[in-house]
Image (tube, rainbow, N blue to C red):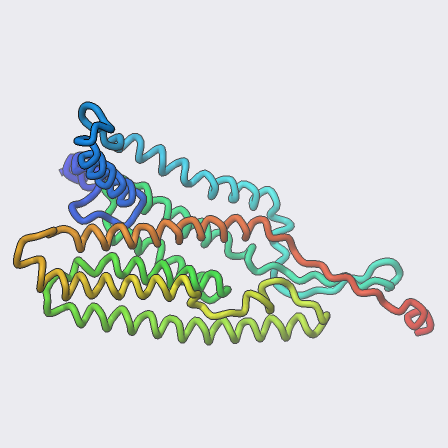
Length: 319
């Protein structure tokens, strides 16, 4: 029983991926391998290659483990910096005012709320890294990134956009697990309802939070820190996100309508829907993984904001 449990925990004998590839780095790697193999087989008769084509190297469990550890190094480095500067990073709750030089200068400190969320950001990034580089990773493992990411989804527009992208791509990658034709409309309406409700609620929560932040800052200064107002106040779904939704809708139509009607009866390209789902979702999720890395590093590097206002020394002296 112990040996069976170890085989379940460390399935090194089952290969790098499932028959249905998880939408991670290895899906893109294997897709590139198949494309190169196909192209070289077509080019060989032309005499451009001699001998047999050697595909991309096979990924062993050791290589996968090394990639996983290397991918987590940024989180370890950021955690070390946070621990080294814990005193500075702990100043992040409220707006305070200090006076210097005989009450002639008011120095206003506005704490950076991003710094409070570093631990959750590190968990999200490490979960993403585990999903991207783990050996024989299952497609459902993306939930280990989506669940902690919900804790950050209401903190800023960037985090909300990252949550929407990750959850949409991650959930879409799970749709082939519901393979019965009768479940097609159920899958479609569940995805549309979740995305619509998430966008509506997050837009409302973030807009309310931005109004509160603007009100707090306005009580002490007329200047606003970056991220409270200005260029960051835009919709949660960017043009790139909308283009991605169009691609996913076209892919869903092919999976559920075109392929079953025209290609499945001929037994042609039986695994093309699974391949397309894995690769398209993998490309999007790799982008989300890199975005989580950027937000984690920015969280550590963002300095606290100080705004200085000149006081009227003569009036204060008279008082």
